[in-house]
Amino acid sequence: MRKFLVVMDDSPEFLNALRFAAIRAKKTGTVVEILGIIAPEEFQHWIGVGETMRAEARERIEEHFKVFSKWMIDKEGVEPELVIREGEKAEQVLEQLKEDKEVAILILGAGSSGSGPGPLVSQLVARTGGDMPVPITIVPGSMSKESIIAVS
Image (tube, rainbow, N blue to C red):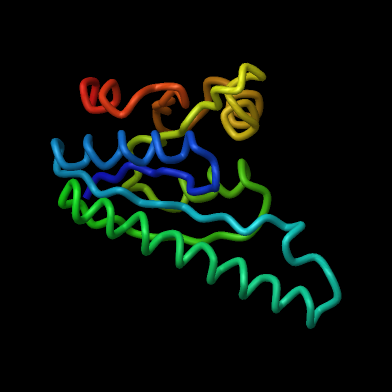
């Protein structure tokens, strides 16, 4: 089954990317896969402390996923999948794309602060250039809910 991959974080632009993915998935019969990434700095401490921090980060991702999953099911009738990876964000996105051949499109939110599209969008474009294994859809962070619905 074809999938849309959305990278979960705490940014407002993630919500726009998720809304776009949910609406498109409903219209096209596609699955939404949400990727939560535990950054290396979250668990590179003493072993005992690092393991606790890793577990807490995983729990935080799972709790956020529950909220977003409920919203997607209630509003769009789309039940997302969760994947959790550990490591540097851009690297883990590329690894997920390489490992999950069902992902057809990567959907990212672009920052709206005026300082560029955001670190993940910039890193992926700089790192891969035109060699991405799938197309990328970039949803502007400043797009309104109504605009996202209209173009989805």
